[in-house]
Image (tube, rainbow, N blue to C red; front, side):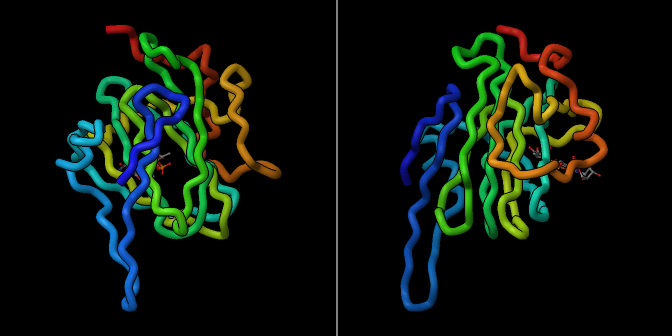
Length: 182
Ligand SMILES: Cc1cn([C@H]2C[C@H](O)[C@@H](COP(=O)(O)OP(=O)(O)O[C@H]3O[C@@H](C)C(=O)[C@@H](O)[C@H]3O)O2)c(=O)[nH]c1=O
């Protein structure tokens, strides 16, 4: 296992060890003690699985009162995965990072609490699995507009993305509540 930094503070790429043999392969997808040892000291309480079709964009989501750290991974297909730092006291406040995640490369992205998260689907379909450090709370969910010009995410996209009704109503950064400095 290896941890690679991204341009966002505390947001890291996790490279997983894969053990291949004549039967196929084996990999550990999460072991709390190892992640803690490697600096991802998180207590995950919920696992989510979604399937999305080509051209779908989910996000950019965050919970304000109960922020969720997320450990995300693609089981089938490929996405462009994005985190936007909304922590006012972070050195990378207002910045974004994007990483291609696919099933062929055994990688995860750890998105710390205090970031908005979203992904864009680059393959015919995507199976997306992720762990969260806080329970989902629909009443606490906020959506940052995926194409906010002030954030300026460079999505590798052609044409208009497929969005949920909720994500179509995402707010521009200037109207989004952020995480105050503590
Ligand atoms: C996220 C979530 C949704 N749901 C329900 C609510 C709704 O009826 C249905 C679909 O929800 P959504 O449209 O919000 O699903 P989705 O757009 O996939 O939401 C997810 O997007 C990615 C980018 C994230 O970062 C996640 O944290 C999560 O917000 O599933 C739950 O029951 N539990 C959950 O944890």
